[in-house]
Amino acid sequence: MHPVLLEIGGFRLYSYGVLIATAFLLALAYSMREAKRRGLPHQLIPDLGFWIVLGALAGSRLLYVLLNISTFLEDPLKIFAIWSGGFVFLGGAILGGLLGYLFLKRRGQPILPWLDAMAPGIALGQGVGRIGCLMAGCCYGAYAPTLPWAIRFTDPLSLAPLFHPLHPTQLYHSLASFFIFFVLMVTRRKFETPGRQMGLFLALYASFRIFIEFFRGDYRGYAGPISVTQLIALAFGLLGVYLLARRPKAC
Image (tube, rainbow, N blue to C red; front, side):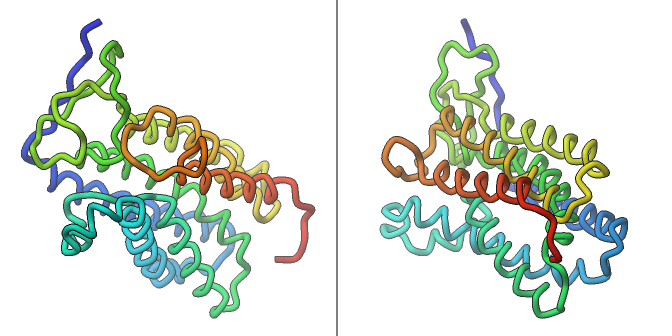
């Protein structure tokens, strides 16, 4: 069966940057709305967002570099070429989450309610940001010559293999994130116990991430039969299950 083609043209870099920036802004804007709804001091969002975004950018780039260390050892200056793509969300989640946690602790804020306030925004930002991944050609899928909705990249600057029909894993991730956002919106009044919304987000995100990884074609390191990113996602998923199952406590 002949695959459907999607050609990414010369606007790739511009579109990638715009979509990533839009993803961060949407995540922050929605988090501010949720924080206000939950009675949290939403005025902290700009400062909190600064540290989370800083950590997210640094952490996602760092994990990408570590997973592709041989490439960057040949040309270390490429480490700083962030405009050409090359980020791993899980790395950004770890470092961004850590900086956000430290900021909130310094301000004497309850952690779990803030996590719940930010969960939908993260999902929404992920949905938009993954379209940026499509523009850059990163996070590309495995070879799929008979897949009716396979895509192929033709831009020489693309991070994906050129002229090969591939699984559109960037779109799989995007659709999964929008679905998670929808679920969080539907259940947000049913999961008022602090930590439950973030727990639901982590459990759903990890499940989708682990599954979609089987259709990825880019190198993500390996930990036995699974990828490094699947292993990290599993840890996030277990944390999500813990947050869902824990008994209510003071935050």
